[in-house]
Image (cartoon, rainbow, N blue to C red; front, side):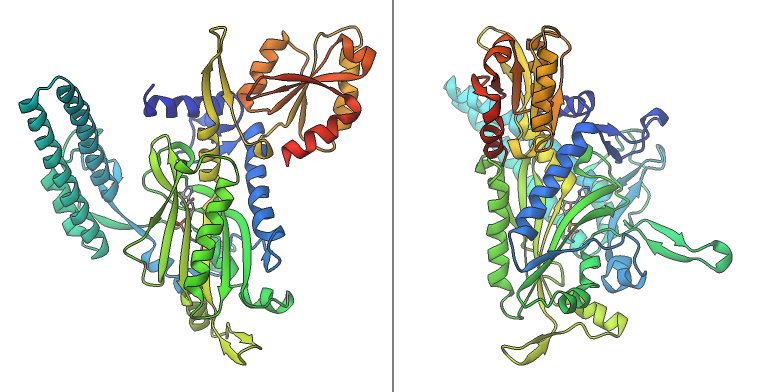
Length: 503
Ligand code: GAP
């Protein structure tokens, strides 16, 4: 199965087993908007809790807030989003379809990369067959393709950096890129498209004001900096964290929940002394990677991507990239944002946003390190890594979601072996002991093997079976999802046995 097919299966599994549904499906859906279903919302909540505990509960100098989605419109002027939160778009005049100009070029580059991969495969075969002349020819083609990729990438980056929209259009035309729908090259000019959604606050008769749905949660932290610092008696260095919805009118909606129009972020702004920001940037770069790896997903699935070209307000930035089924892509951003945001808000609000440092007897605008991760992207990382299809020793197959136990939506399934002889009643007793402590599911329908498979497919790490021996000796069988090993445990010991495994 290639990666594209695998990804399709993952998306289908997420729907079929109650993790993620397309939004408004009975009305044919809404592009790039999704609903989290019964198991999806559990998994998502567990991811958020895992982050909140690591960031807020485990750091004495970080507190959490929950600011409103609607904010004063001047905030977005101060932050630069009104003027510069844009993507370059282009329309095909025949199909009337709109594209992100840079994505059209990236897709073109991807096609050349696919060609390179094919050539490399051919070269391997020719090498094995000692077909030296043909091997050289293939290698030569790879070199040419690679040069084309490098030249195109460099030209695109230059156009984007220089805001050269005419240059982007010229590049699309020179490369001969056609609209995938109409097949024509009849393009409009490239224009900038602001990604913020706007709406009206107040009734129109009162002269309603335009406000924006926040495109990041970070600004809600910056504008509360002074309130939190004073009321929380915070001492630098300290952090403010929050989890919340963000909205972006993405032009290109694809790759499932990787790029959505309504999504959730988990962000933390860490306020430090000017001059100490790069030390703290390195600290958070490492700390966040440790957080990811503590989940048990092997390290080779993560990598840093340090930004060479920095935003004007940043003096260091890196992404933690994850190996999604469609390749390594950004999962989290860590940015050293200098004093840009607080200074801008000082300027636009006219209020002093300073910290008085009793140690140095100075008052200053703190510098900021930001860690920012999308909940939905984290969900996709965990879900796609967990999805496994296995062939068992007896030749049968099973689909299993190997979630880390602490993130699994259902921790334990309680299954009476048969639906009679007092087993359902006993199973309900076990359920009553466990359910105040963990998410449990009771299931008595179908043969036990089918019930195990159902639990595998939603990633339940433990199944507990109540059988005829249970009624005599008060023990149950625990079946582990990953190893499928089974062992007996007294009901009185169940909590002691399970709780440490789920922590
Ligand atoms: N406050 C900084 C900020 O918003 P960003 O790189 O634009 O930085 C941070 O976004 C994270 O939010 C990304 O690493 C990604 O995980 C997530 N994210 C951004 N846009 C998204 C989208 N359209 N859909 C889902 N997640 C998104």
